[in-house]
Image (tube, rainbow, N blue to C red):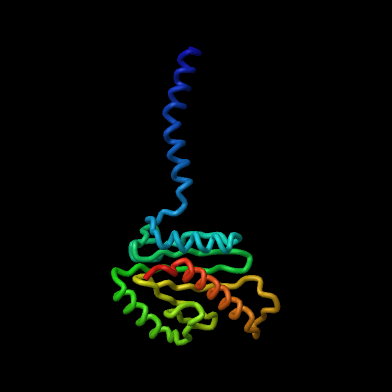
Length: 182
């Protein structure tokens, strides 16, 4: 009887090991999106400059549901005690398509504040100065929410100014990461 119990236990353990290894592999794979070299370059540049910020993948919302990641958009949310910053990277089939979509967007939101200190094709819009920029066949949109702003109240403009600073800081890091891209 003991022998049968031991063989049964060994069989169960032997059969369970592949399942445990697979579970560890699935747990280690946090980002279910397909690999994208440009998104990786941007993420590494931000992580190198801002090591206290945590990156989290955000699935784009589409008709097929949240779990169906789109190949055309990659969204990362960076978080710290300062706030949250979203960097959305849109991949277009060609540079001409990207330029056309970018021009339509900037005209539609009245993104009329040109940011030459960020990039030639960088514009800000809205109260918190979200940023849109284009590099090659990529359009990048950056927005932020500031947290723990000192002296902020309903009538203060400190929070929008801090959000504008965060967005601009991330935009400069993105442009720096993609400086050699055409």
